[in-house]
Image (cartoon, rainbow, N blue to C red; front, side, top):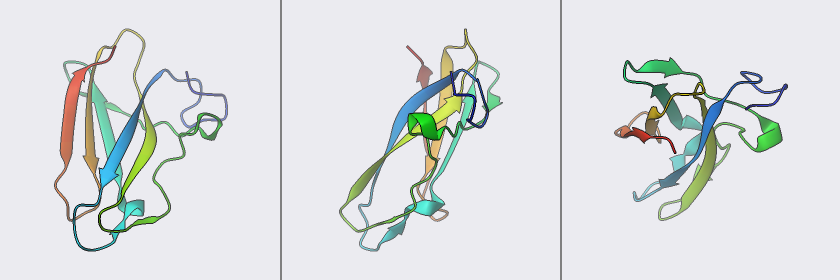
Length: 105
């Protein structure tokens, strides 16, 4: 459950870590990272949770050198009772989106 100062506040959510590895030769601007979620069999849109009290601060505010990686904590709204989530991650506008889907345990 997100805190009373979170966006959205007092909302159940799934917490996970997004790991971005820069396998390219150029510096990657991680401020362009996008994470989108949906849940349930019908793919209902899920809001990202921003809650500084729990370390969910959104995208990093840094650049990532070639060969380096960064781990970013993330949260997406997941109503109680829902078990299926889809997470879409794109490190920037030029990269392919990675899609992960499965049950939440």
